[in-house]
Length: 498
Image (cartoon, rainbow, N blue to C red; front, side, top):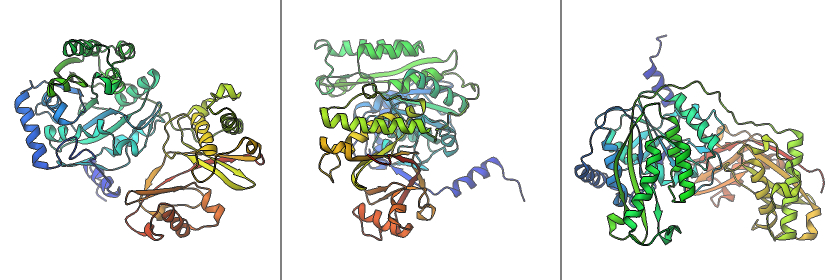
């Protein structure tokens, strides 16, 4: 048999992966929906900017507002790339809608699409990121998050289509996770990689609840933004983050910028390409957002190998005991006091395993009958916080039942399902009853069953999917075609009696 070359192996792998495309949610609002219109708009921006082409650009900071506001600044930023080609582009943008404590999300699709066409994702690179527990897949974090999507037409316009994309939606990270993320990325990139940190700068005005001054707004905004840029220019990560906290000036992509600064090789050059504000664009500074484009030059150097920090899937018996204790104590406290208690108020010991970012469901039963069940599929916070939150919601916020009364608390039993991150499967044939929880999605509607639901009801796969289709508000045979499935697994444990 003929030995495959590396490009042939890549093509074979691509063919074996079912194609799935994330369509732009921004076309027609944040930028034109028509291919010719968006190209004409970007060409006009480029003609006006005439940015200086820089040698050896390895990274950019770009704004992410609608093109009518920040497009000129962003186009100037990508214009600095000149005619250099890149095999891979990593775009890191902040999560504006989805809470993600100390985690980042990479999508499980194969392509992103804009009016300028489809761009393939670097699935091999993404798979390497997923070996680390702080990289997970939270699809809703990508579907409507503009901070990453907005950069793609700019890259298509500047680089044509000769690159693979790595979209990363960045959550709310502490300093330690920023350092770990930078180390992982730096260990994987090469000289053909461009890194983009997507961020707007100061958000000023009553709409943003930030009005530190009312006179000479334009000059003071620039002073505020350039104060932040001084730390960027010095590649001073700690100083930059401290400045953002102290000034409270809403640089929404401060964490992606901090990751980028932590990745930069020694001696990297920093170049301010363009600065502007929406107040200047519209002539109205009542509410204004600042935009900055910067380019970093140099050469990426491979760092030391980073040992994967894989997601821990086991919980000790003591962990389970403490989580059940936390769930019961939290909903009992809420029912009695009308507010949520902190774990330390409930005499619960939180272990390292309980601190791992993980989704959960909490199920409450009374005399073996369901009394409330609420949870989340996508991980967004440490497991102990997820259990505390969902225990309270299951008791008082499940719309199928009246809120739990004080006299009922002692009569309920608690069951917890600690989930693994959901993953897409090619079809219902991949679903294993008793092992997999199932998410069914079709025509904008979806529904979920935990792994234990089907065995408890005695259902096989077709019966389960019929019931899941009905739960999603679809015809009972909707699951048979044009339907997307994700599966997850769960550690399920509960109380034997109240």
